Each structure stands twice: as structure tokens, then as C-alpha cells.
Image (cartoon, rainbow, N blue to C red):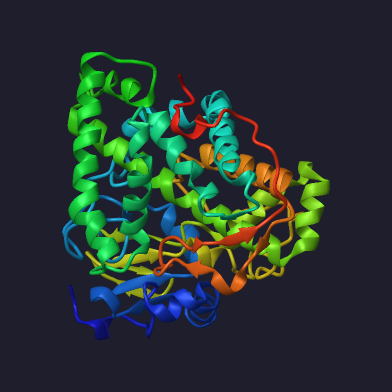
Length: 420
């Protein structure tokens, strides 16, 4: 790589810093208004694309801005800065044209029709999780927001008894501070154990398929040959990573905001039909995946910035979603906003395949929270944010009280698979 001086403009910015995590929206706003494309020396150096136009253009150009795993910026997951110690992921770390054959395998299991068939699973676990706290009148609302993790584990066909470990380990990989006990527990202990569990299930389903997603994947072909166990693991690990974090981030931010804006909360309670459009606005405003990374494949001038082969690039979805050139009053939530061309699920070929499932889980969670414990009161003095908010934003503790209500399912419903 060439010297930093060849890259301009240069700014002081680090999306993983404590300063940024205190107020990501303000941090990106300052950057976007001054330099929508800029270079920072943090983490070995990377470009930050914070303007909507820059994000839109780069995200659609996979030949210049590659998602493929590479050695630039060190070893590990290519789509985050700094890279994290994660296994190779398919298809997010594969570029077109190879990308298409893998996405073709994923699309049928994440399409709207497939998600519609999952309604039973999603509703079962949301109901069960709220049942577990509804009679007490108090809870940490993040316990309810664990639903996406258990739904994902059950949907894939993994042992449901490990769902909490899957949730905490994958979550820690993106939001915990490297070097902390939480991060080390995930990387050195939990993730290796979970990889062994996942690979064991893949082997079992290869020998005797059942009716779950892993069984579907092990029976697929690419290039006229059966997929390998390693390739199935690469897809399953990605589906787990996406399933345990982004929806929880969205819902945690939303429930806190709705408590702080009780007129909007009451409007959604009185008019539940508004939730679908409101959900798109919550996605825009909170951008549960704040940013993902690419790597420049060739020397190029991009919107006036001199980029070089091997440069790392942060595509800031969260910043693009607050760009005043695209959204009126971008720092305000308008649940009636429409159309809403947000970038919360990405843009282009790599647009999130799990967006339909994420929406379905978020909608059911918010529907039942508002319908069954809609008068909840959050203890704002005891809120605890994610320590890192560079990739996912949200709250890791949301203490709340509410009017107790009745259970709807049997007492052991949370522990049971919704598929059997």
C-alpha cells in the first residue's frame, strides 16, 4: 500500500472508538457533512463512505469494491474493520459472478413464501419468551429480544439447548471489545465448541436428512457437484451470524425509543396496521447493521478520492440512512414516511438475503410487546449500551416494569422446538 499522504482527505475517525459509540449518528453526521468520502489512519487505515451517493455507488460495484476474503488488513472476516477471527462465510465473502450460484441456494429458504411458512415458529417463540416474564411485571427486555437467536437455531436444525451460547458468542464477536473476558470467551471457548456442534449436525444430516435448513443445504449442488461439508458450514455460520444480531439490535433500539416517545407508542397500539410501514422507518433510523467493509481491487479515483488496490473501505449504511439529500428531517422518526429508500439491508448483489425473515421476527416481537406489555416503563438510568457500536448498535440491558398478564402457552414452551 502507498503512503497515507497519497490519500486525501484525511480525517480523525474510528467507528469502533468510545467517542463514536457515544453517538454514532452525530459522529457520522459530522463526517458526512465535511467529507462524505474520507481516509482515516485507524486500524491500519481505511476509507469511510458516509454519503448516500457514495454508499449507493460503491455497494453496486462489486468489481471495484470486493467483498471476497483476502489478506489485506490481516486475516479474518473480510466484511468488517478491523477483521474478526471468523470462519469463511458464503456467500457474503464471495464476489460475482461466483456469488450468484451460492445466492441461488440461499434464496429459496429466505424468500417471502418461505418466511410465510415460518410464521408458526416465529410466533411460537415470541409468545413463549413473553410468557416467561409476563406474570412477573418486570424483566430485562433483552431477554425477550433473544427470540431471533432461538428462531434461527431452530430453523437451521441445530440443537435448541445451545441457542444462548450461539447468541452470546456471535454477538460478542461484533460488539464486545477485543481483549476483554467476554470477547476471549467467545473466540477461544464458545465459538470452537459451537463449530464442533454445527459440523456434527451437518454430518448427521448428510447421512440422514430431515426437514430443516441444514438438511436442505447438504442436498444441494454447485457446478454439477454436491456441496461440501465445509461449504455448508460456511453458509450455516453466516446465517447464524446474521440471525442472532441484527434483529435484536433493531428491536432493542425501537422499544427504548418507543418508551421515550409514548405518543408514537400509543399510536401503534391503537393502530397496529401502521407497524409495517413504521418498521421500515425504524430500520432506516437505527440501521441495525451500521456498516460493512469492502476491499479496493484496483487503483481508481472514486468521487475525487485517490484509492489504491488493497485499500480497505467502510460502507456506512447507517450514515447513508441519515443523509439529508435523500431524507427529509433525517434525524427524526416519522412512522408515516413513504417511500423509504433506506439502505438498512444493503444495496446491490450483496443485499441481505435474510431481510424478509428479519422483518417478520421484528414485526412479531413488536406486535406482541405492544399488545401484551404495551405500558412498559424502562429504567433509563440503568440502560446499558453495546460497548462497540461500529457494526451493530443497541442495548445489552433494558430493565423494565409493566402490568402483569397471563401466559398463553405451556410452561415448557421456550425449551421446545417449534418444529416438532
